[in-house]
Length: 421
Ligand code: HAM
Image (cartoon, rainbow, N blue to C red; front, side, top):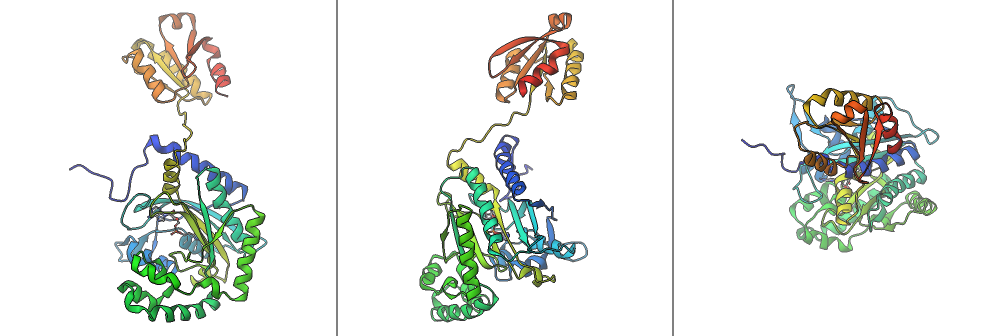
């Protein structure tokens, strides 16, 4: 039997890693600049955690979770996202936060959603996420939105639009739900059976339906943005003022509702229009009620997650050249097996100076060895033959410059170090 990676998963091959390192480096820069600290979370959690956080009527919980029972008949789920786990960990580890001392946390790793795989949509995918916990001010929302924006700008993803909205709070959403339900029930039989069910239990989730006919019906639906309470309206204005101060371009899109139940007030997405249906590179929002809902103290919070694969696809689509990674500094080529000991001696010296080095197979032709150097971006090659052993002078070839210099054995590491720097 020939094994294949499961549908919706894929290997990130060594030759692709430069693309990932490119974005990861930019992410690392911004989490450091804005002072976020890393958290590493379990890959699986109790299923109920996601059910409660993301919501029973969400696509994620209804259709996309990988749920399994362990040997003690406990129900777990592979994590479909990171925010619920951060909130769980915040409570479990008695973290304390305030406006003066917010907890600023980031995570990075694979998430799992059982959806129909297509370009930009996988069953295992990588997310980078940041959460700003303990500050209800609009500045916190703006900081989170700005970080995602700056990461995408610095990575040079072209034509990203940032769309923001407010989905209100518990208070104003109650009245809005009533209005929305009135609108939906008046057209009930024009919606698909799933929407008909959702309009009774959780009307906002009707907006998540991908069915074209349902979407058409929603065109004139009342919008949350027109139904905000005074406090939510003020908050939304302040988010925008802060974004302007931070030089972030945004558009208001009253149709952004996000597919997860925990959001309050600000909701946003970074979008592109050249990746087909998978047009969101990232998104997030405020979730002031979640920590309390999971059993913690009333704690405001806001965050975002970005899909790594989609960012890479967008950059590939745009023809962006990813920097190559030089992994090998020196290829040591013994011209005969009898020079292998010398090759090991030189390799040890180079390694002691933190210069990467690898020994060629003595039976391989010189031509193949130099082809290896070209293919692998090797910086230098050192050939070991009879003359070199006797004289202790080695020809160090600079592969990209097609030049060579003769260097004494004792000076090899200093010479290569100076050239690498
Ligand atoms: P989300 O919108 O569900 O938000 O996911 C964030 C991003 O993950 C998406 O914009 C997309 O780029 C990527 N993504 C989602 N599903 C897939 C998939 N099947 N294949 C590839 N990429 C995918 C959240 O997960 C929230 N936890 C964001 C958040 C953080 N809100 C507050 N804090």
